[in-house]
Amino acid sequence: MRQKIVAGNWKMNKTLDDALALASELVGMVNDEVRGDVRIILCTPFPYLVPVIRLVGSHPLISVGAQNCSEHEWGAYTGETSAPMLASLKAHYVILGHSERRQYFDEDGKLLAAKVDAVLKHGLTPIFCCGEQLEVRDKGEHEDLVRRQIEEGLFHLDADAIKKIVIAYEPVWAIGTGKTASAHQAQDMHAVIRLHLATKYGKPTAEEISILYGGSVNADNAKELFSGKDVDGGLVGGASLKSREFTEIVKSIL
Ligand code: PEP
Image (cartoon, rainbow, N blue to C red; front, side, top):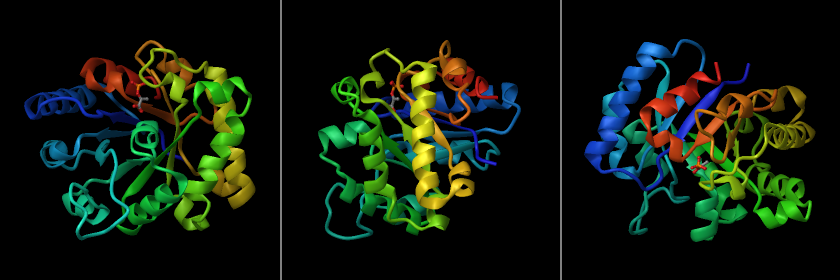
């Protein structure tokens, strides 16, 4: 059975005090209101990982993740943070290949494949992002592009390793724009991704992989967006910065 997941991507937001207040409100709301099988992941900025991990403790539903990591393990890479460092903090997830990293930091398939390997080697779970720009969808090339992103970043993995990946389909035109894919568009692309995984790894393996939708998910649209049979939850940006709204989004997957 694949895991239902709602992950919050806090991006480059919040002071330390505000981050701790948000995490603490969320833990309280989840304790009071969330019953069921869902993994909630808080992907915080690097400096807040340790305090948020301490605050969350060994919570049964909530884990903490990073938003990026280096493909290198150690050494002279000023400003970078590596997978073994994240593992030593007891972070459990790492977002890789977010469209903002692809766009502003030129992250390509080859680099992302190396980051995926580094993250898996140290026992963390990659949340691997893919998704097309509007002009690609307008040309009808969105399915090909997403299949290619998955091939470049993930298809070097064997069947055991691919099962450890979480995929997030995030159409770039829906990220931070208030414009979501329709539930139909989300389900269609998730089915394309799962079929592509099945073609390479077999259907039973593909069925085990959680595929999240991301792009302007909020408390009002989450239930519908999560209703597709291949949509296993969401990767949430802006709405993850508000404890009430994020909790409502979590509840809508149950
Ligand atoms: C994201 O950053 O992954 C994201 C989906 O952002 P938003 O929910 O704000 O569109």
